[in-house]
Length: 357
Ligand code: F6P
View (cartoon, rainbow, N blue to C red):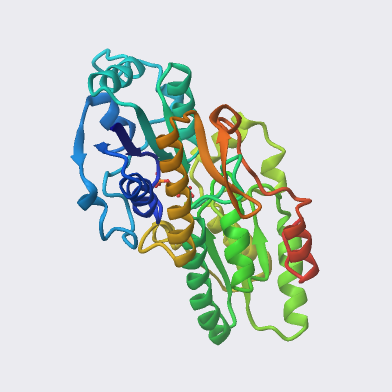
């Protein structure tokens, strides 16, 4: 009999339910008796002892369901070791609730911040197995995170729709794709939808290069241009500012986001009509795509196997198509970013996509 605590933390994404179902199905199919305690709203549930006991039936019929049956919230790692507003030591509280329920392990589904806290709990002596979720695909130690492919589908569909109206009106269109720190989602959705210009946080742009690309397209007879811009895209000028100066600039909120800044600059310098579309949280919503359903199920199955073997302290990920276990200490605190020298960036450039660099 295994007593398992489970939680989903951070921004949600598609296939969280599929992954949890994969863990539980694996345990039950292999005659491993399990008592599951589902902590509600991420680490908050573990801190404040808010949970539901779950049985096999709770995980039935959720393979295709978006969101998370446990709820999620952001509990920043930065302040996890600070007392809460009532003076509660949050890390001690999590340890106590783990002990009170006599848990054998925690299954934690999350992204970067979540993994830092999971690793801290491991260092504090708790048994932890984690699963990599995020539409940003920025977790170190895995080639892919679940949620990413589903979000690529949604963002691609948004840009596809913009294509037809941009063509009708001969406009420049900017579609802002999620990703504050990394540009995987923008890069993939941009390439999948035939965007002409892709701006990423990792490759600072020069607005004159962006404009030159628009003009070059017009000279060749194209009436419109599609620009996929990551939430965290940054100009070369802003990238040269100190962190403090850049934060100050953002705090002034001259533009709602970088896309509007790019739009205003193009409009001002060229007089062209520019429109901005922000699909926002639609990118994290809805049903997981088939790839994510399979992928999250595979990850869940491997996590179930680790639990049955009593192997803890790992994130389950994928490397070269194989599901692998990666020590948590190797994952926590590292971001997997788009390298400007990555082969996918070089290939995109060969295809004529402009990165504004
Ligand atoms: O979870 C990742 C992510 O969707 C990022 O792509 C995005 O920048 C951020 O979360 C949005 O966070 P929130 O849902 O808290 O607004």
